Amino acid sequence: MKYRYLRYPGGKPKALTFSYDDGCRWDKDLALIFKDYNVKATFNINSGYMGKSDWYLTKEEIKEYIIDNGFEIAVHGDYHIAPGVVRAIDGIKDCLNCRLNLEKEFGGIIRGMAYPNSGIRKLLNGASYETVRDYLSDLDIAYARSLGGDNNSFDLPTDWLNWVPTMHHDNPKSLEWAREFVDRKTEEGFIAYRFPTLLYIWGHSYEFNNKNNWEHIHDLLKILADKDDIWYATNIEIFEYVEAYSRLVFSADGTKIYNPTAKTVWFSQDGVTYSISPDETLYIPSQD
Image 1 (spheres, rainbow, N blue to C red):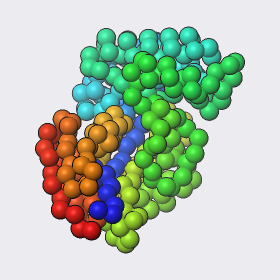
Image 2 (image 1 turned 180 degrees about the vertical axis):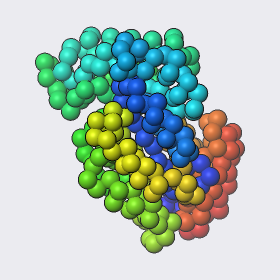
Image 3 (image 1 turned 30 degrees about the vertical axis):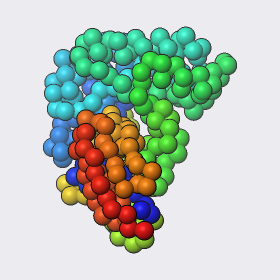
C-alpha cells in the first residue's frame, strides 16, 4: 500500500458546505434557495435574539424554514459575544447558554458552532486560543468555524475548533474558485495528489439584501449544484464523516481494515475506491 485517501459517501472526492450566521430573517429566503438547488447548509443562531425584533427569525420560522428542510442549526452565541476578547467565564456562558437554549427549543443534540463577532481572530484581555479550545471541547462542541484565510486550496481542516472556511461568498474570486473546484480532476494524475477536497462558503444572508445582489448566490449555485462527484453536506455531517474515517482500524501490514463506527466509510487506496460497512473487516491484499 502506498497511498490511501478519504472519499466521501458514494466514493465522491469532493464535498460542498455552506455556513450562514445570526439567524436573521433573510435566512428564510436563503434556505429556500438552497432547497431549490438541493444543497446543504448550516445556519448559526444567536439564541438570545430569536424573535426579539423583525430582523431575527422566530423559533417557529427556524423550525419551518431551516430544520424542517434538513439544514443544521449551530451555536453562534446566546448574545453574539466574541470569545477571544472576553474572560473565559463569559465565553463559556455565551456558548453554553446558546447550546442549552437551542436544544431545549428544537430538540436534538447540537454540537456545531461558528465563532461570533471577531471570534478568535483577536485575542485580548488575557484570552488565548488554547483556553477557548479547551473549554469548547469541555462543552462538547465538536467543531467551531473561524475566519481569516480565503484561498482555493480546498483543504479539510486540521483543527476542527479552528475550522477556516474556503471563502466568503462575496470574495472577488468566488465564481472563479467555484469553477476551479468543479473542474478539478481529483481522480486523475499522480496518485500522490488525489487528495479529498472541500469547498466551504460562508456569509450572512442580510448581505444579499443590503447589496441587492441575490443573483450572486444563484450564480454560485448554478456552477456548484447537481454534480455527480460532489457530496452536499452540512458542517456537522462533514465532521462526523471525517471522524468516522479517522477511526478506521488497520492491521500492522495494512491489509486488514476494521470499521468500528456506525457509518459506511469510503476511501481510495492506490487509485482504487473501496467502501467498508459498519462493523465490517475488509481485506485488501498487499500490492508491494
